[in-house]
Amino acid sequence: MIYSMTGYGRGEASTNGMRVSAEVRTLNSRFFDFSFRASRTLQNYENELRELCRGRIQRGKLALSLVELRTSDAPPTARLDTAAAQRLARELSQLAKDLGLDGGVTLEHLLHFPELLVQVEDPTLSELLLRLAREATDAALTDLCRMRREEGNVLAADMSARLDIIESAVADVSRIQGDVPMRAVEKLRERVKRLSLPQAYDEYRLEMELAILADRLDISEELVRLRGHIEAFRKTLQSPEGVAGKRLEFLLQEMHREANTVGSKTSSLEISHLGVRMREEIERLREQVQNIE
Image (cartoon, rainbow, N blue to C red; front, side):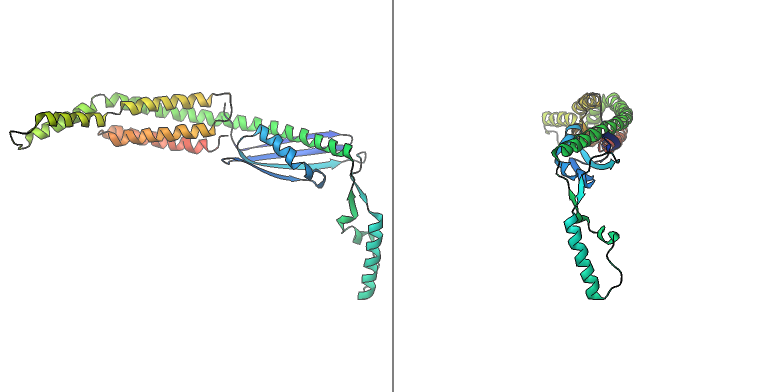
C-alpha cells in the first residue's frame, strides 16, 4: 500500500462551550516540512502538534491550521486590564486637548489597543485547549490519511499498468535477442573474409576478438536485472509499510540504467526501439513516484 503526498483533512473537537477546528494540507516534498497557523490562544502548542503530525506523516510539506471557537458558556481566556485602560484614556484625552481635537475618548478608541486584554493564566484551561487541539489535529490527520491512501491506490494502479508495458517490452527484447550476437559475429566474419588479408594473419586472435564482440552484444544479464527490479517495484507497491517513495525512486534509477545499457549494447534496431519505449514508461513512472510518500 502506498500513500500520495498530496491531500486535505479536517477535524474538530469540542467540550464545555469550546470548539477547536483543524485543517491539514499536504504537498510534495522530499522531506517533512511543517508550517503552523493558529488562533492566539493555540499558538503555544506548535511543538506538541508538530510531533503529533510527524508521527503520522513521514514525507511532504504539511500545513496545519487551527481555529478556536467559543460560546458564552466557555471559560474566559482573557480579561480587561482596567487600570491600563484608565491610564490610556487619560493619555488620549490629554493628547486630544494638546492638539486641539474635538470629541472625547470612546470605547471604540480603546478597542484598537489589543494589549489591554491580558491572557488569563489558568493551567487547567491550558491543558484543556491542548487536549482539544490534539484531538482535532488527530481527526484531521485521519481524514488526510484516508484521502492520501485513496489517491495512492489510484497511483498504484496506474504504475502497475506501466510496469506491464515495460515487462512486455522486456519479454519482446528477450525473444528478439536470442541469436542477435551470433548473427552480428557471423556478419562480421563474412566481411573479414572479403578483405584482402595477408595469408599469415592470426586466425586465433580474430576468433578471440569475435568472441569478445559477442559477449559485449549480450544483454541477457541486463534483462535479468530489469525483471528483478520490476518484481521488487511491484512488491513495494503492495508493501504494508506505506512509506515507499525513496525505495521506488532508487528502483527506477536502476531500471533506467539497465534500459539504457540494453539500448546501447544491441545492434538490433527493433530492440533499440523497445529500449526507447521502456525508458519512456520509466520516466512516466518517475513523475508519478514524485507524488508518493
